[in-house]
Image 1 (cartoon, rainbow, N blue to C red):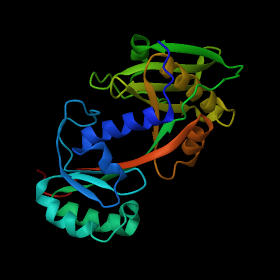
Image 2 (image 1 turned 60 degrees about the vertical axis):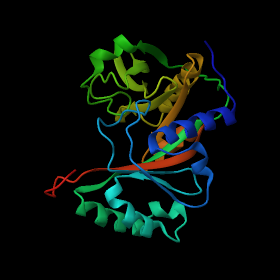
Image 3 (image 1 turned 180 degrees about the vertical axis):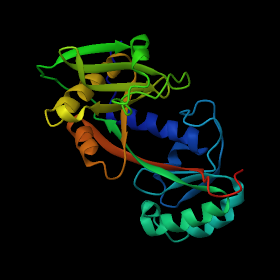
Image 4 (image 1 turned 45 degrees about the horizontal axis):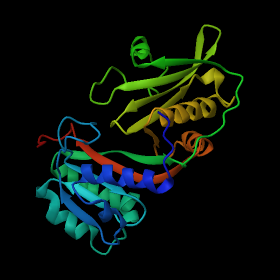
Length: 260
Protein backbone atom coordinates (compact mmCIF):
# COMPACT_ATOMS: atom_id res chain seq x y z
CA UNK A 1 0.00 0.00 0.00
CA UNK A 2 2.30 2.76 -1.25
CA UNK A 3 1.50 6.26 -0.01
CA UNK A 4 2.91 9.35 -1.68
CA UNK A 5 0.92 12.37 -0.45
CA UNK A 6 1.61 15.92 -1.56
CA UNK A 7 3.22 18.63 0.54
CA UNK A 8 -0.11 20.28 1.38
CA UNK A 9 -1.69 16.99 2.48
CA UNK A 10 1.23 16.18 4.80
CA UNK A 11 1.20 19.63 6.38
CA UNK A 12 -2.57 19.54 6.86
CA UNK A 13 -2.38 16.16 8.57
CA UNK A 14 0.28 17.49 10.94
CA UNK A 15 -1.76 20.59 11.77
CA UNK A 16 -4.85 18.46 12.35
CA UNK A 17 -2.91 16.25 14.75
CA UNK A 18 -1.48 19.21 16.66
CA UNK A 19 -4.95 20.73 16.91
CA UNK A 20 -6.16 17.52 18.56
CA UNK A 21 -3.36 17.71 21.11
CA UNK A 22 -3.49 21.45 21.79
CA UNK A 23 -7.29 21.67 22.04
CA UNK A 24 -7.58 24.18 19.21
CA UNK A 25 -8.41 24.38 15.53
CA UNK A 26 -5.83 23.72 12.78
CA UNK A 27 -6.31 27.31 11.63
CA UNK A 28 -5.12 28.62 15.00
CA UNK A 29 -1.53 27.79 14.01
CA UNK A 30 -1.77 30.20 11.06
CA UNK A 31 -2.81 33.22 13.11
CA UNK A 32 -0.56 36.09 14.14
CA UNK A 33 -1.82 36.37 17.72
CA UNK A 34 -0.82 33.80 20.33
CA UNK A 35 -3.50 31.33 21.43
CA UNK A 36 -4.05 29.97 24.95
CA UNK A 37 -6.29 26.93 25.46
CA UNK A 38 -7.20 24.61 28.30
CA UNK A 39 -5.30 21.33 28.46
CA UNK A 40 -7.21 18.29 27.24
CA UNK A 41 -6.20 14.66 26.92
CA UNK A 42 -7.75 13.70 23.62
CA UNK A 43 -7.89 9.95 22.91
CA UNK A 44 -6.36 10.49 19.45
CA UNK A 45 -3.29 12.33 20.75
CA UNK A 46 0.28 11.08 20.45
CA UNK A 47 0.49 9.31 23.78
CA UNK A 48 3.71 10.61 25.34
CA UNK A 49 2.11 10.96 28.79
CA UNK A 50 -0.63 9.14 30.68
CA UNK A 51 -2.10 12.43 31.94
CA UNK A 52 -2.52 15.92 30.46
CA UNK A 53 0.53 18.15 30.37
CA UNK A 54 0.29 21.05 32.82
CA UNK A 55 1.57 23.16 29.91
CA UNK A 56 2.61 22.50 26.34
CA UNK A 57 3.36 24.92 23.52
CA UNK A 58 3.95 24.73 19.79
CA UNK A 59 4.73 27.03 16.89
CA UNK A 60 4.74 26.53 13.13
CA UNK A 61 6.71 29.76 12.69
CA UNK A 62 4.01 32.40 13.12
CA UNK A 63 2.28 32.47 16.49
CA UNK A 64 2.49 30.08 19.44
CA UNK A 65 -0.38 27.94 20.71
CA UNK A 66 -0.20 27.15 24.42
CA UNK A 67 -2.36 24.50 26.06
CA UNK A 68 -2.23 24.78 29.85
CA UNK A 69 -3.96 24.27 33.15
CA UNK A 70 -6.44 27.07 33.79
CA UNK A 71 -4.65 28.07 37.00
CA UNK A 72 -1.80 29.56 34.96
CA UNK A 73 -3.94 31.22 32.26
CA UNK A 74 -3.97 34.71 33.82
CA UNK A 75 -0.17 34.75 34.01
CA UNK A 76 0.17 33.37 30.47
CA UNK A 77 -2.19 36.00 29.07
CA UNK A 78 0.05 38.72 30.43
CA UNK A 79 3.26 36.87 29.43
CA UNK A 80 2.38 36.54 25.72
CA UNK A 81 1.04 40.09 25.42
CA UNK A 82 2.94 42.04 22.78
CA UNK A 83 5.29 39.12 22.01
CA UNK A 84 5.68 37.46 18.63
CA UNK A 85 5.04 33.76 19.07
CA UNK A 86 8.36 32.46 17.79
CA UNK A 87 10.28 34.47 20.40
CA UNK A 88 8.49 32.77 23.28
CA UNK A 89 10.93 29.88 22.82
CA UNK A 90 13.97 32.13 23.32
CA UNK A 91 15.96 31.84 26.53
CA UNK A 92 14.97 35.16 28.14
CA UNK A 93 11.26 34.40 27.72
CA UNK A 94 11.76 30.75 28.62
CA UNK A 95 13.37 31.81 31.88
CA UNK A 96 10.26 33.78 32.82
CA UNK A 97 8.05 30.80 32.00
CA UNK A 98 10.27 28.42 33.93
CA UNK A 99 10.20 30.67 37.00
CA UNK A 100 6.40 30.75 36.96
CA UNK A 101 6.02 27.02 36.37
CA UNK A 102 8.15 26.19 39.39
CA UNK A 103 5.58 27.98 41.57
CA UNK A 104 3.12 25.31 40.41
CA UNK A 105 5.50 22.36 40.83
CA UNK A 106 6.60 22.06 37.22
CA UNK A 107 9.50 22.91 34.93
CA UNK A 108 10.04 22.83 31.17
CA UNK A 109 11.31 19.66 29.51
CA UNK A 110 13.18 19.44 26.19
CA UNK A 111 12.37 21.55 23.16
CA UNK A 112 11.54 19.31 20.20
CA UNK A 113 12.37 20.51 16.68
CA UNK A 114 10.19 18.52 14.34
CA UNK A 115 10.66 17.68 10.66
CA UNK A 116 8.27 16.46 7.97
CA UNK A 117 9.24 14.77 4.69
CA UNK A 118 9.22 16.30 1.26
CA UNK A 119 6.44 14.78 -0.78
CA UNK A 120 8.33 12.13 -2.72
CA UNK A 121 10.34 8.96 -2.30
CA UNK A 122 14.14 9.18 -2.47
CA UNK A 123 16.46 6.80 -4.31
CA UNK A 124 18.95 5.08 -2.00
CA UNK A 125 22.26 3.73 -3.28
CA UNK A 126 24.19 1.87 -0.61
CA UNK A 127 26.57 -1.07 -0.28
CA UNK A 128 25.53 -1.65 3.32
CA UNK A 129 24.35 -5.06 4.43
CA UNK A 130 20.79 -4.30 5.52
CA UNK A 131 18.52 -6.21 7.86
CA UNK A 132 14.85 -5.31 8.29
CA UNK A 133 13.06 -5.85 11.62
CA UNK A 134 9.30 -6.12 11.92
CA UNK A 135 7.55 -5.34 15.20
CA UNK A 136 8.12 -8.75 16.76
CA UNK A 137 11.76 -8.78 15.65
CA UNK A 138 12.46 -5.58 17.61
CA UNK A 139 11.65 -7.10 21.01
CA UNK A 140 15.15 -8.62 21.65
CA UNK A 141 16.70 -5.15 21.24
CA UNK A 142 14.79 -3.55 24.13
CA UNK A 143 17.23 -2.55 26.85
CA UNK A 144 20.14 -2.37 24.41
CA UNK A 145 22.00 0.82 25.32
CA UNK A 146 23.28 1.23 21.76
CA UNK A 147 19.86 2.22 20.40
CA UNK A 148 18.17 4.71 22.77
CA UNK A 149 16.90 6.90 19.93
CA UNK A 150 16.03 4.30 17.30
CA UNK A 151 13.59 2.41 19.53
CA UNK A 152 11.87 2.88 22.88
CA UNK A 153 13.36 1.53 26.11
CA UNK A 154 10.59 -1.07 26.22
CA UNK A 155 7.50 -2.08 24.28
CA UNK A 156 4.88 0.65 24.55
CA UNK A 157 1.50 -0.44 23.18
CA UNK A 158 0.27 3.17 23.07
CA UNK A 159 2.98 4.05 20.49
CA UNK A 160 4.67 0.78 19.50
CA UNK A 161 7.91 0.40 17.59
CA UNK A 162 6.61 -1.06 14.37
CA UNK A 163 9.58 -1.21 12.01
CA UNK A 164 13.38 -0.89 12.05
CA UNK A 165 16.30 -1.24 9.67
CA UNK A 166 19.80 -2.25 10.76
CA UNK A 167 23.18 -1.89 9.06
CA UNK A 168 25.31 -4.97 9.69
CA UNK A 169 29.08 -5.51 9.88
CA UNK A 170 29.15 -9.27 9.78
CA UNK A 171 27.12 -10.28 12.83
CA UNK A 172 27.50 -6.87 14.50
CA UNK A 173 24.97 -4.06 14.27
CA UNK A 174 26.58 -0.81 13.13
CA UNK A 175 23.46 1.31 13.42
CA UNK A 176 19.69 1.18 13.56
CA UNK A 177 16.85 3.41 12.43
CA UNK A 178 13.44 2.63 13.87
CA UNK A 179 10.00 4.16 13.87
CA UNK A 180 7.23 4.20 16.43
CA UNK A 181 3.59 4.47 15.40
CA UNK A 182 2.81 7.56 17.44
CA UNK A 183 -0.54 7.54 15.65
CA UNK A 184 -1.78 5.15 12.97
CA UNK A 185 -0.84 7.79 10.35
CA UNK A 186 2.28 9.37 11.87
CA UNK A 187 5.39 7.25 12.47
CA UNK A 188 8.33 8.93 14.17
CA UNK A 189 11.84 7.96 13.05
CA UNK A 190 14.86 7.76 15.35
CA UNK A 191 18.45 6.82 14.52
CA UNK A 192 21.54 5.52 16.35
CA UNK A 193 24.94 4.70 14.87
CA UNK A 194 27.66 3.17 17.03
CA UNK A 195 30.56 5.62 17.58
CA UNK A 196 33.14 3.56 15.71
CA UNK A 197 30.97 3.53 12.56
CA UNK A 198 30.01 7.21 12.42
CA UNK A 199 31.02 9.43 9.52
CA UNK A 200 30.32 6.79 6.88
CA UNK A 201 26.85 7.92 5.79
CA UNK A 202 25.14 5.08 7.64
CA UNK A 203 22.57 7.33 9.31
CA UNK A 204 21.58 8.91 6.00
CA UNK A 205 21.13 5.52 4.32
CA UNK A 206 19.12 3.96 7.14
CA UNK A 207 16.84 6.93 7.74
CA UNK A 208 16.13 7.30 4.02
CA UNK A 209 15.37 3.60 3.65
CA UNK A 210 13.00 3.71 6.61
CA UNK A 211 11.42 6.95 5.41
CA UNK A 212 10.62 5.37 2.04
CA UNK A 213 9.29 2.15 3.57
CA UNK A 214 7.03 4.09 5.93
CA UNK A 215 5.41 5.78 2.93
CA UNK A 216 5.04 2.40 1.22
CA UNK A 217 3.17 1.10 4.27
CA UNK A 218 0.65 3.93 4.18
CA UNK A 219 1.96 6.20 6.94
CA UNK A 220 3.74 9.55 7.09
CA UNK A 221 7.25 9.49 8.58
CA UNK A 222 8.36 12.40 10.74
CA UNK A 223 11.56 13.17 12.60
CA UNK A 224 12.42 15.08 15.79
CA UNK A 225 15.61 16.32 17.35
CA UNK A 226 16.87 18.80 19.92
CA UNK A 227 18.02 22.38 19.39
CA UNK A 228 21.79 21.82 19.36
CA UNK A 229 22.01 18.30 17.92
CA UNK A 230 23.44 19.50 14.62
CA UNK A 231 24.46 16.04 13.34
CA UNK A 232 20.84 14.95 13.75
CA UNK A 233 19.62 18.10 11.99
CA UNK A 234 21.97 17.36 9.11
CA UNK A 235 20.70 13.79 8.86
CA UNK A 236 17.12 15.02 8.69
CA UNK A 237 17.90 17.52 5.94
CA UNK A 238 20.02 15.01 3.98
CA UNK A 239 17.15 12.50 4.08
CA UNK A 240 14.53 14.78 2.55
CA UNK A 241 13.00 16.17 5.73
CA UNK A 242 12.37 19.86 6.38
CA UNK A 243 11.74 21.68 9.68
CA UNK A 244 8.02 22.32 10.19
CA UNK A 245 7.19 22.90 13.85
CA UNK A 246 8.68 23.28 17.34
CA UNK A 247 7.01 21.97 20.48
CA UNK A 248 7.81 21.76 24.18
CA UNK A 249 6.05 20.65 27.32
CA UNK A 250 6.35 20.86 31.07
CA UNK A 251 7.28 18.07 33.44
CA UNK A 252 6.99 17.71 37.23
CA UNK A 253 9.73 19.46 39.17
CA UNK A 254 10.98 16.96 41.73
CA UNK A 255 12.57 19.75 43.78
CA UNK A 256 9.22 21.32 44.67
CA UNK A 257 6.72 20.07 47.17
CA UNK A 258 3.59 20.54 45.06
CA UNK A 259 2.61 19.05 41.74
CA UNK A 260 -1.00 18.95 40.60
